[in-house]
Each structure stands twice: as C-alpha cells, then as structure tokens.
Image 1 (spheres, rainbow, N blue to C red):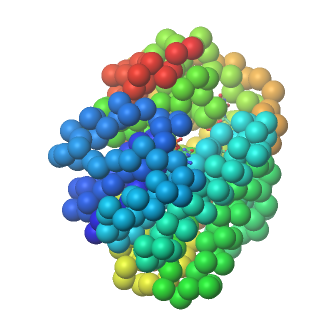
Image 2: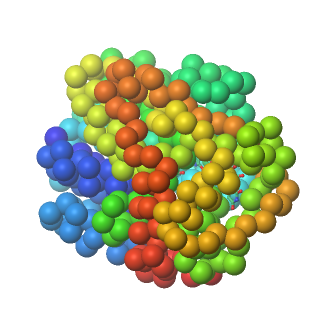
Image 3: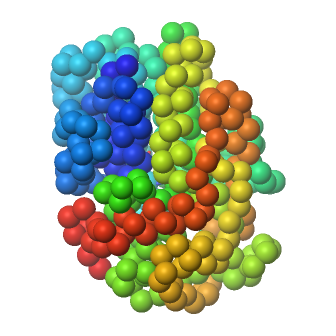
Length: 341
Ligand code: NAD
Ligand code: WQD
C-alpha cells in the first residue's frame, strides 16, 4: 500500500515509518516540523533503505494538502500529527484545539476529495482519565481531564460521525498507553526539546548528565511502593500495531477502537531501577509532592488488539530501558541540540 503518515518525523511516527517500510509499504511523510527535526530524515533513509518522500506541509493548509493528495495515490493514512503536552494544553487550549482538531479536519477534507477512506488514528489512554478499575478495557467510561485529552476524544467522536455518514470509511482508533524506548539501532528516538514532561525521557536526561536528579511525583499512592503505576510500551511494539491496524482495515472494512499496552503496570521506582540495570548509570531521585491531575494506577487490557489485530507487545521493560539508553547515549542532545537544558 501507499501510506500517508502525518507527523511521520515525530517520535512514534518515525518508528512507524520504519515498520511500514519493512512490511513493504510505500511511505510518504507530511510534517510541519513544529515538534520535530528534519535531521530525522537521513536517519530514516538509512533504516528504510531509501529517503522517504516527505512534504513540509501543515495539515491545516488546504491547498498544500490537496496538492499532496493529487501527487500521490494513497491507499490509507496513519495520522500521528498533533500537539501532545498535557500541561501546555492547559495554558494554550486554543492552539491545541486549532492544531489537533483543525489539522484532522484538514486531513479529512483532503481524504474525502481524493476518495481515500482508510485511517489509523493516534488516540491516547488519556481519554479514560482516572479509570474506575484496572486493567482498562475499551468500553470503560471516557472522562478526559485536560484540553489535550479533549482534543483526542473530540477527534474520536468526529471520526465516529464520519464513519456513520459513509459506510466505506474505515477507522482504527489506537489508544496508546505510555510509549517509551527507541529503535534498537539507537539512531531514532524521543527528542522532547526543553525540559521533558514524561518520565522516561527525564530519566534518560538524568542518566546522561543533562539533569541532576529525577523528581518523583508522589510517594504516597496506594500502590506497591507508593509511586504511580503505568503501562509502558516499547515504541517498536507500538509501531508494529499500526501496520497490523492497516491490515485489519483492509481485511475487515469496519471501524474499531483498540487499547495498545502490555497489560502490565510498572511503578516509577521499578522503572528507575530497571533503567539503572540496563544503563549501568545511577539515576538519583527525590520524592516530591504529587503532580496535579495524576492518577495512581493505569494499565491496559490489550485483549481486543490481541484478538482482532493479532498483535501483542513482545518487548519487556528491560528492552525498553536498554533501547532508550542506547538512543540517549548515542544522541545526548537529541537530533539537533533540541535537548539543550
Ligand atoms: P511528536 O510531537 O514527536 O510527533 C508529532 C509530529 O506531528 C511532530 O513531528 C510534529 O511536527 C507534527 N505535527 C504536529 N502538528 C502538525 C500539523 N498541524 N501539521 C503537520 N505536522 C504536525 O509526538 P509523538 O509522541 O510521536 O505522538 C504522536 C501521536 O501519538 C500524537 O497524536 C500524540 O497525541 C499521540 N500519543 C502520544 C503519546 C506519547 O506519550 N508520546 C501517547 C499517546 C498518544
Ligand atoms: C508517568 C509516571 C508521573 C515525570 C502522559 C499523558 C498521556 C500520554 C502519555 C499522550 C506518573 C511520574 C513523570 C517526572 C515522575 N501522552 N513522573 N516524574 O502522565 O502517565 O501520561 O503521557 O497522549 O496523555 O498524560 O506519563 O510519563 O508523564 O508519567 O514521577 O518527571 O511518572 O507522576 O506516575 P502519564 P508520564
């Protein structure tokens, strides 16, 4: 298939491009580089066997998107492009709604005009907010708690309406839990730019000496060691699920929503210890007060993806830490100095 990957220069999108190329698909990237660097492209070329076609276009640029769909005959779209920082979304809700919903509308208009009707969408476990029980199934209550999460939920709902209006339009919503790790080559990985919001890139920057110590947000949660528990998933496992979802859409011709996680919860301290083992570095930490909006424990029930996509996570926490560390130690400042303190 010829696949358009929106946000393909970003963290998860780049890993998906590699897997899609390995499965024999033709990949075209559209990315405005608002949260990524063109420096990823030659590295992708080395992993994919050739320079991926790419367009520096904002999804909200109607003429640019129409041109892209005229130039290429796409069979399907994998839609990663979005802003993703929870804290920033609380400060700049308009930007998040404009970019994430406006961008998706721009994409859907271009798809509709070109008659492209298969879409894999990057959603998030954030749509569950604080779940009543774990593991979380796809039919759990949806209760978003921040503007970023609301954009994901609104897009899922919008896609549901598009599917209802057009029986030939098929969508797989993929709700990611906590993606971490990097390609085993160490040449592509997560490059947050500035102070990382998420745990694993923060740990990596402490281990490589960019930051003095990790602040652990809360040591008094009702969990085994008092720290928050999440379902960390290796980005390469996650990337594979996108290729499986495209196969599902082609085979089953319907819309579905899937959790993507390992099904196993890991505490902050467990992740720090696993990282220390994998890297041979110490990760000094202090326990500070809870981060507002955090919940004690969230992990997935990935049974639906197992059953319908034939997908399951294969890489364990040691592989996640080993590959995150290889990327960080080979690229201490990210792709182009984006990690400057
Ligand atoms: P990322 O920021 O690394 O990648 C997103 C890419 O989209 C970037 O390269 C950015 O430049 C591009 N982009 C953003 N807005 C654009 C626009 N209007 N037009 C063109 N390009 C645009 O993020 P990521 O971690 O790779 O996440 C990918 C997707 O997965 C996002 O939709 C995110 O919300 C979702 N997600 C991420 C996580 C996570 O923890 N990383 C968890 C759950 C869901
Ligand atoms: C994990 C654990 C923190 C940083 C977020 C988004 C979610 C999704 C994934 C996009 C928690 C603790 C963290 C630190 C810490 N993204 N922590 N010190 O909050 O589960 O999910 O990323 O869709 O929407 O909300 O991930 O990595 O920020 O935190 O102690 O410096 O690590 O309290 O227990 P989270 P995270």
